[in-house]
Length: 242
Image (cartoon, rainbow, N blue to C red; front, side):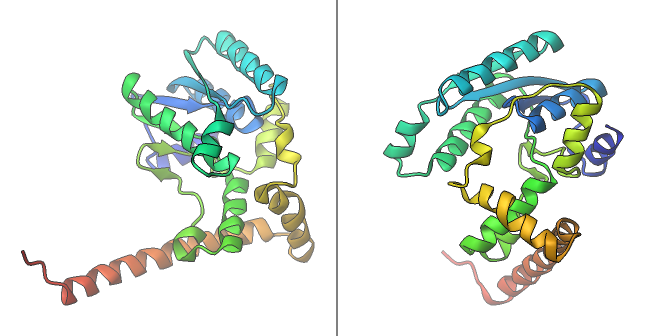
């Protein structure tokens, strides 16, 4: 909890005067973030997306989140999506369709609820997995920077902790959460990286996660130097006329 509090301050993510919308699925990460922000006294409301992709499991997650909101006396927003139809109509993968729908709704909530930031429960493991997803697909320097801690109105306070730390915190505080069955399916690239690639790399280098996070930090510095130099070059060679 102290680690998260210090990280919020160090990264200037938000203050206790700011109103947040916390995206909550009912899974370990978002439940952990909810509990920590609640205990630290931050001002936030919950937002839950039901993508209607896993039948009874999706509905059970919604019920679980409703119960959480009642226990902690937090305002809860719920939105149902026809994700499959949206995916087909826009020729998107299911994961990308869900992402687009989620962030579009969160953005609308910022305005309607007069909130300042959307809090998302990405953690250090998500950052590592995204690094490899972008590396596999080919993305250039920008993609290798993986997930940013703060992007416009989106903040990610858990990026300083690992999935293991999150699960340890939940167990220590006897906090229940829901498990998403799709997280074990090897149909998705992220899960292949999580369950196959990273364990293999860990055999070769037990500190591979720390190594990748350190590499991302180095690449952030490289990107900053590149951007500054590119700006300087453009000012020298480009002229703005009518």
